[in-house]
Structure formats: structure tokens, C-alpha cells
Image (tube, rainbow, N blue to C red; front, side, top):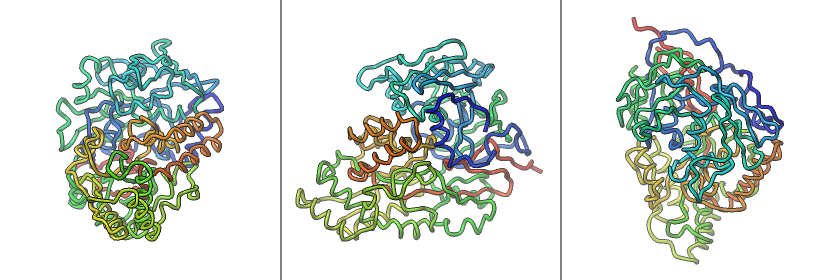
Length: 542
């Protein structure tokens, strides 16, 4: 890990939060790029982004995968999740409340503009402003001056000191603020973005290891083509010539292309091949733990799911799901039944939290709770779980629906949408009228990241509009702690409330299941399940 200066005791917590992930790996942090054909284009799978590629308005995996390659933030995360300075020369504080951030000199966007303190401050102000309705605005809530009620075009807590220096004043000391700064919401933007932000989102200008190949490189619903950015000087220098990220309609189609030699790196194995892919690809496959959590959300606005009746029905549904059987049969043991709302690879994880028994398969208790809910208001209709058909989810959604149906004696089924973007649009505009698949791939390695963005009042990824003041207060208390154990205790206590309210139904933790072709080497999947694409090398064509 490169030298970084996080100058206060509170920052020890941020670093400690990554210790379980840091190990001794040098992946992602070395200056020497692996050897291979430096002009070769690496092909990989992806999904059509939900929105134009504006960092503060992208909170899903398809768009995030692209943004992380074409932008460089103050820090990035190495293969094990440890932060490494990227655009930041230093991040310092004496009180964990006011941070002084210095940007490295001579950094450029791909249009030639310099990366300055203003590049960050203007982008953050845009993301935080109420009128701009950015999905990741929640990430700026900690900065002094943020408001959900009044549009604030410039946050009081952000100050430009000089071309390469700015300060950030928070509302309170916060334990993991520096650790968050590798997330895409905190990326800088060039001045060119403000000429037409909508047009910019279709053809973004970044400062990362890759850039869009040309005007029109993003072929919607087909692929996006990236090429190496020779001006990037950070620790993620590409060992290849670029990436073609192909938007497949199904995981099966992507897998068939890998088998046929038409795809270099596959990041998700279809459920039907989970039991065989490791035998087929051998040491060109991966099956490792990752900071990925799977669930489905039942909004309280749906009939029968508000108040006491809703709580009873959520608990009944959770206890009606045979997670052990589903992870074994559908996923061939490549998923682990959930015991909480976070991930086993994150420091502070616990399997013994009060109330977690609601995640155990308990048909008798499920029937009892459902009957209690029926006594309040008799059930009617079909319980549906919406999902995107291009993500390989049908098998488990059908299995979960059948488990609920068989235990509770109600009609239950999956409700497929053709694409991820279509499903996410219905979810984010609140027009969906069923339960729906949700999940979380961590933005940075901390318990809070699995809780605040998803269940905090008003959070950008709080798709079910859950709100509980006691939960919010525990999150705030945890962030204010400068001791890792004390902070995690607050986050664990916050989960006890979630077990009672069940704003989402936890299902299982995902592992990274991927494979790659014979023509590529140096393939390593990171802590968050995404390959370190810049390290992948490809043999020269004969």
C-alpha cells in the first residue's frame, strides 16, 4: 500500500476497518504493470447503466463498473480493500471533523483540463444540491451545510484554499470519512461537465486509467468501449490497451461466449454452471468471498405491508425461506445464508446479533405469524418479487417464491423485467407495486456502508423508503466514534432494529464466481467482486 497521511486517531479506525481485507497482497498497488500486449483490448461482461454516467447519480453496478475505470478519485482500493492515495497527495485532520485535502500536482482530465481542488468541490456541491436530485447525494450528508429540505448550491463545509488544496468540515467527528473517498460519488469533474451535464453523462470525460474510445463509444444496450488513458499517472496503470464491456441479455449468453473463446473475462457464472465451471476452467476460475449481500425489499407502501400487519408478514416471509436448501441446490454451495445485513469479509461482522433468528427457516413460526397478520387484515392477491432477467436471477427468485408459497399457502411468484435498467427505473421512480430484488456491492469496506446508504432516512439507495429515528441515531453515534470496536457496536445495535422491522429480507452473501479465457493472464478479483482490469494482460495475436 502506498504511503498515505491520515493524521488523526479517528483515521486509525478507517484503516482498521480495512485490516481484515488488507493481508499482504500487492494487487492493485504496484507501479510495475504486468507484461503482455500493451495494445490488446480485454473483453468482459457488464450491464447497461441505469442512467447517464454522472458519478453522483450512479449507484448501481453496471454504471459503477464503468465509472471506476474512467475516473480516479482521491483514493482507490487495492485488491484487499485497503485505501491507496490516487489523486490525493495527503488527507489530514487534527480532530476528525475538519480535513485538509491536497491534490497531486500535474494531474489531468482526458480533455487536457487540470485536476484541481475546484474539480472536487464543484462536483461534490453538485451532487449534494437538492435541486439536482442525485441518487448519491446521501454521501454528502455529513458535510456541514447539507440539507434535505432547502437547496444548497454550495456546501458551507467545502472550502477551496488554493488550486490544489481544499478543506472539508463535517457536522461531527466521523470515523470512516477518509475511507469513503474512493467511492464514485466523490470523483472530480472537469469544467466541461458544466456546459451540458446531460450530454456529459453520455460521453463522460474522466481522469482515470481508461477513457471512452471515441464519440459514440457507448452503444446503448450493447457495449461500451474504453481505451487506455496515457495521461493517468496513478497506481492503476493499465497493462492492456483497453476494455470492451459487453452488455449481455443473459448470463448464459456471456458464459457461452467465454466457452467459445469470444470473451476474455466473465464476472458472473450462471446458476446452471455453478457446479461445473471450476472443473471446466480449473485455475482460470475464481470462487472467493466478496463484500456482496443479496436481499429483496418489500416497501411499506404496498398493501398489507405497513404497521404491525406489515412487520408480522415480513417476519413470516423471512422464516418461510429455506436459505440453506436454496444456496445448496440453486447455487451449488457458492452462496452462504445471511446472518445479518452486512458481509462476513467486513470487520465487525457478527453471526450472533439479537433477533437474527428471523433469518432461520422456521415454517411453524412463519405460519403462526402469517395467521396473526391475517387476523388484522386478511391477505389477498399474489406475492411477487420483481427482478431483472438479464442478471441470472430467475432460478433463485423462483425457488424463494416456491418456498414462501409452500409454507404460507399463498400464491407467490417472480416478476421479471427484461433489463437491469428497466427494473431499476421502476424502483427508483417508485412506480413498482411489488417486492423487488435488492443487493449491495460495497462501495468501501466498512459496516456502515451496508447500512446507511440502504436504510438511513432519505438515503439514495433506500429503495423501500424505510425510516426509523432510533436506527438513524445509532448510525450517527457509530460514525462519531473514533474507536473501531465502539463504532461497530453501534452498527451492530442498529441491525437489531433492522431484524425487527425487516425493511429488506436478507438472503445470502455472495462469492465471486468468475472465469477467464486461455488468452489472458494476471486476472485478480478484488474485495468487492470486480476484477482489477488494469492488471489483466493478453497475449499478442499471432
